[in-house]
Image 1 (cartoon, rainbow, N blue to C red):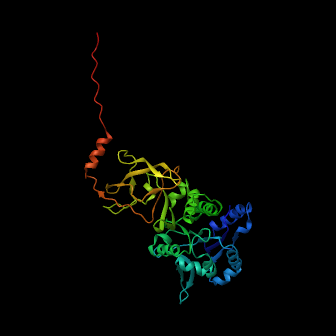
Image 2: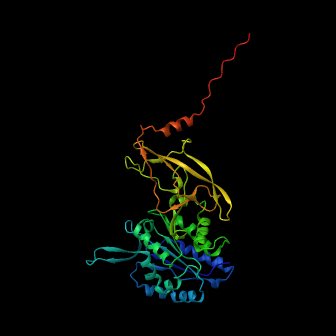
Image 3: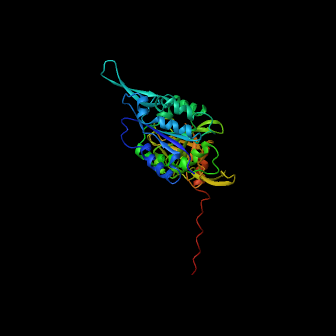
Length: 379
């Protein structure tokens, strides 16, 4: 059964290409038409950067009707979709611009997410959705924004505080510094629709429902996940957790974690993962506990070797302990890990031969077969 939900959107004025909000409105209207259209309410998308007061924008977008919907549906969820830019070093969201005192230059203004939400969506909506996560259906913020909004520590901590204060249940962001919005629109739209129209009996918490919807939308979307990992900020077993969902082919990006820079020459453009050395790189069958409490066998990359083709240095790395697989066992090389995570590698000069090298070399040619004795000739 479809969950009641309020959809609100926010975009910057130069984001002319239709994004998740434009795609999700007709999709959710069609989904709710089969059940009860009164459970789905949406407002017009607000446009930032035009120097118009937010109160005026909200009045034109009929936000009073949205407030009335939340009051009449005490368990309704909230879905906010934001499409804008982020500062490469400060993070946050680009929301406004203004002229300098001399009138010769336009300056951009960035707000932290905790500042932007009440400023643009209005305090009445934020007050209504805030509180214990068990009161309402998932309260989710989807950021179709470049990676600094989550990669910059101050900006990320600000969003984690929103989850800790029970303002939101989940925030979905993207890790890549510069993303292609058109590539992310289809899976993010599917995620939004899945979150409020699909419910599994094993998902008893808002976080579990968000993860289910995310995996259904991004599972096997290899071209998307190679472009950027999806970052989820939500409550977990250890409090607020920030987790990356990535695709990690062992030949290019093991476990979905960014390839490290060379520890000797400092370059990263020439780092390639050695997938031909079968004595070191290989997958293994790992038994994990499934969501039903049973044991499930999955394939995970056990270890890998990085090689710098600039200076020839090499580094061998075993799978980090906190790397896990997605809950769907049939998704091959789909990994999750705490965000941010970096590879801690020990680099060796190319002329260094370690005991491990010798063992690997021996393993590469095990039990060399001796030539068979020549047969005696018969006359």
